[in-house]
Amino acid sequence: MDHIRAIIQHTKEHAVFPLVCADHCAWLLKKEFSEVAHDPEQLADAFEYGLNLYDSDAVMLFVDAYVEAQAMGCPVRYAPYPQLEGPRSEKYVDRTGIIIEAAVLLQQRISVPVFVSIKGPFSLASFLSGVENFLKMILTDEEAARGLIDEALGHQISYVKQLLDTGVHIFIGDPVASSSVISPDTFSDFALEPLKTLCRQIKQGDRIAGIHICGDTEPIITMLDDIDADILSIEDIIPRTRTVKMGGVSTGALIRNDSEQVRREVKAALAMRPLILSTSCDVPVQTVPDILKTMISAYHEYETE
Image (cartoon, rainbow, N blue to C red; front, side, top):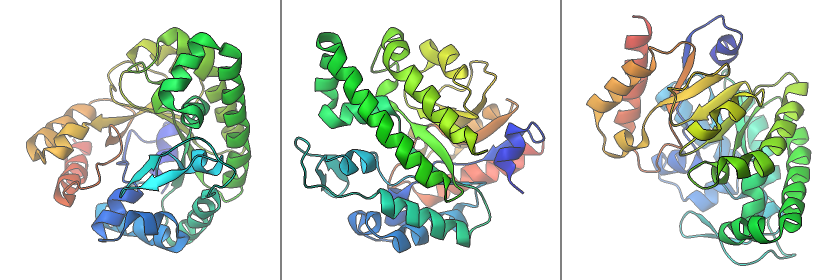
């Protein structure tokens, strides 16, 4: 059963979907992340292993934040995890094809929905010029900033079309659009419409569109709710929304390996209906597997109450 779609269609109240990503799966398998990130077979193997270990209701095929920036000319260094390095270049590595191939392989092997995480145009534009430079550009050269966002949006529309052909669902991650980084007015003026455009593109193919934004989202929650996404993955799941929320378990509890706090957070989160229980952000690389298993077991225990 597709528990994620059942929640969106209001035929189920809860599902569980921690954000287990490629770096954690590679660490579990004791493999070099840079090797896994460049091999679709190894990516599919890693995510299949993570799913079998944690038994969640979906898989998030997220490799790292810089896949699309690298495809648009940004050099990326592995030390051992990806970091942007230097200005854009004509010599670049395009890993989007690797992600697409891994998505196809993974769907052939597993029975739960596969989501692919892509970057929101605002965040991708910031990576193309450097986050600090881009935020200054918004204040000093609005035309140039909008040009970068349009370029990023064009790339993402093309990428989404290729992904949708494989049958996956899409999550848009837009961390630089967080209210922890920019003002609500800047979000409204620069980040909101590109997110709406991508969501429309995704939903035209009868696929699920999710948005993930880290940090503070309370000042922009009404705007997020009006995007018409199917899922909002946010740290603070308390504000009421029409859109199904996803989250509930803090990153700090995972890092501290605090099983009692995880159980408390799971129980509190499941008082909300509907909700996709998840981690508030990506599972940290070296998270002890038992703490995620505690989250999953607590979900099954409290979800039936």
